[in-house]
Length: 638
Ligand SMILES: [Zn+2]
Ligand SMILES: [Zn+2]
Image 1 (spheres, rainbow, N blue to C red):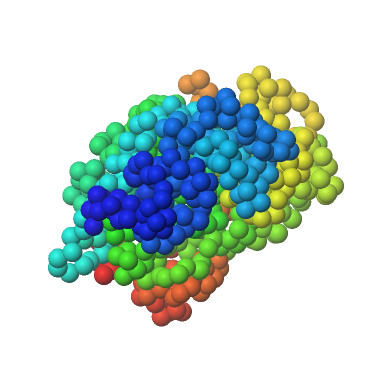
Image 2 (cartoon, rainbow, N blue to C red):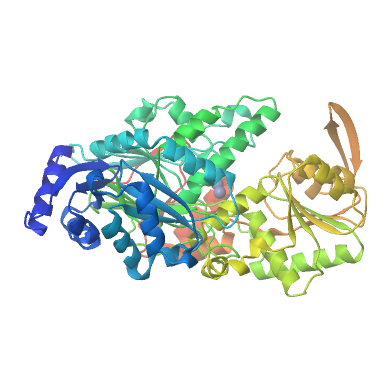
């Protein structure tokens, strides 16, 4: 079926459902969805029902929008909406988009604004002609989210053209003649960690999953193998899918747009926002290290413009013969495992992305139950038999002990953290320990991008575990808003904290101590044996954090170009229980929990020996076919 056929079918179906009684002005594509514009306010108001019927017939996502001629002027509509939505919803902003007929309502309590089963939304539709979309006002202001929302409004026109193009391309004619085949190519992050990239290719389509950079190794191995013929020209790719925002998965995405890719990126909304935050920081850090970043901020904006956000479990067409569904991966905010249903269910591939198969302070455990599974491509970061981490409970007890000991000596606690994930988790543990009186109340200072990343977490409570979500919904209990947390924004604030004689806890970036504000605190606090340095995240070989962790006692650093030697007298502790990755035991439990059992498991995202060890174990224990491809290898699965 061609794109025109699809639109014709839609018109036919809608005429059948409503026996030709509805005034359809236009039917068009909006990315993977079909949008119907109508002048019929009645049909429009009861559109949920019609949409469900249409979706069943057409097997596509359908949206019904009002034709601009039936919508109230924005000022009148705003008054009407304020009358319909109870005050307790606390509306903070309106945005009317004339082209789509949508009004975006920002509210502090979106549930109240929506009403029972969307009752209020229907009333708004009927009375104003506008299609309401309710979004949450972030409880902590996030500059990233504000900038992205503003920017997307600014480029609404361009986005509409882009989405139409995506829709037409998705609905192109298929090559039906001859044998059908499916294969994937390892382009990066196989037998290594970093620069994750996989090409999924069928007789009809090409999809790239993750396009990362390796920030830790030598410059010649930073990027995935994007020069192979299978991905050239870049515009031959139908879609890019991102599992999560970490730079080893998303770091090179903006460069795709610089070199000719114009297609969509499918990812969760938090992944889009965190990705932009981390990529901007990547440019800054590269600049600071005297290296050239592979793209500029304009390329990041371009990537954001091409994002098609998907919620967990929302199935969508991303290529003529591929459907994608994202599922919780438990790793960082918005992290997903990507499930591909290929050739109308002919074959099912799961790319796990980075997974945590344990409920953490922030997230539910990674999803392991799928409707169908044939090949699973999974991470093996901690796949060696020695990779056993403490549980969250043990980690909490350890943190409590270290903090208590240090505070009783009148010392300071310095925790180098990555801005996204671990810092929010440590914040939650500290907040609870202080609230329940298990450790003395002590100011916790957050320095670096931590506050901004935390703000993004609170803007998406539906991506957090149920307990934390409930706390954030009931605003007064939001643990991130606790008075123990203080944001550090200026150099003089930092100096004051460093000079203050009282005990304090500082969470600061960067996580591996290869720069960032953490270094300022470290320089001043290292030679005092009352203080403690706690590592909560992975310290890569060659980083300063790794050296200190190994027990180095003298460190030479450059200060304004001059070498200074720092003697380390402070205690150095490592708490491994806060990892966002599954340890060996959790990886094994994940494999045995996978439902249904796949016929093949491919291991990636782990040092060579770890990936091989996992494959060996899986083959022995589960009698499943395994593979550990090298970068550039291609495997035919069908
Ligand atoms: Zn990750
Ligand atoms: Zn990763």
